[in-house]
Length: 101
Image (cartoon, rainbow, N blue to C red; front, top):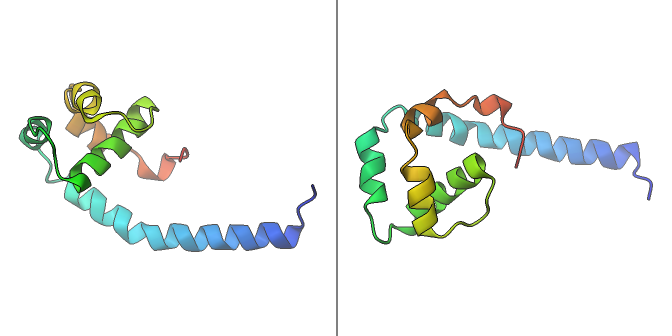
């Protein structure tokens, strides 16, 4: 199936708009990450059932680091939140270089 250059240009334009729209959220997340301490990660790891927003963010980070989709909370706690140096690894990430979705 052939795809026309017009269709490709349309998809590329839509992708560029989506990326530009995401930049403020990414910048805010990077700024917020500066305030995260190891004690905060420990507190999250000690939650039996964290709020959905916390579980969702942790699951996304878990997927990024381990390339495993939708790990149960117990697995996320053990593999991600107990990872030595997690806060430093998060702060050192080059967000501009992330290519996998």
